[in-house]
Amino acid sequence: MKQLKLITLAISVFAIACQKGNSADTDTVTPPTGYVIGKNRFTIKMDSDTREYFVHVPSDYNGSSSVPVVFMLHGTNGNGENFYTNSGWKEVGETENIITVFPSSWKYCILEDGQTKPNTEKWNAQPAGWTPCAGEILRDDIKFLKSIISELNSKFKVDNKRIYLVGFSNGGLMAQKCAYEMSNTFAAIVESAAAIFGPQPTNPLRKLPVLFQSGNEDYGPGGTGPTAPMTSLPTMLTDSTSTLLKGHLYKFSQTHIYYFGLNPNFTISGNVNSIVTATYTSNTPNEPLNVYTVALIKDLKHSYPDGAAARNWDWLKQYSLP
View (tube, rainbow, N blue to C red):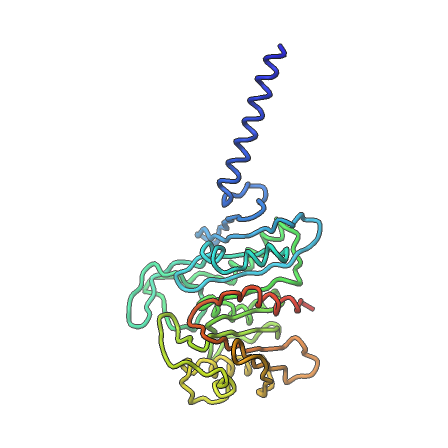
């Protein structure tokens, strides 16, 4: 009888060990009732589509207190898992005990630069330099992000006054769209390498802090052009005829100044050997959170900068929803 009990115990221990081993080997598979520490892949049914997003849960998270959340939006032909791996945000989330979220956009057939490009990952952030092919229906990515936030609140203890958004390239355009349509949800937003310019379909729900960052060699994906001197940031922001960086800094800043009611005068700070910034403040008294900062990064082409996640977090974490 004692021998039978020992055999039964050995089988139980072996089964538990196998379960633990499987959990470690398949850390992207999330239990249906919750989450694992580390990497999680979740899906949401949106209309007739299944959308995905990845979440990094830091090892110090225990659900006893509310924690901040940072969304990171990838660029064209990226996906959430790629930016989970390569953006540096999961490492910042681990160090700072914040939940980091990496949604995937939708794949479309698009028309861009006179070419038809099938199966292209894009965020629905228009107006942009591309249009959907005939028959393509653009997905509602604002609804998608709102649904993710709702799900996060059902799974985690979220500090809803400290939810932030960062977007790169096409994700930067989506981040600016959120600065208008979800500014009552996000405490602050970073737009990296791209933003929307020109007439906008709506005014911002709230005038929130926004940081736009660009490399001084950024002429778009695969693009080339003259390196913008680090001392040229004031000129690029005020001279509509400047062709440095395709004149984008002037267009981006003028659009933001107009719709957010900013004082067109700015203050310059930083170091010409690394990062120079121009900061705009509100034209209206008693709007301390209505801040727009443009950062020019030395020797950077069209990419999300190494170390940017930590620097972006240092900027983001000073803000919260009122």
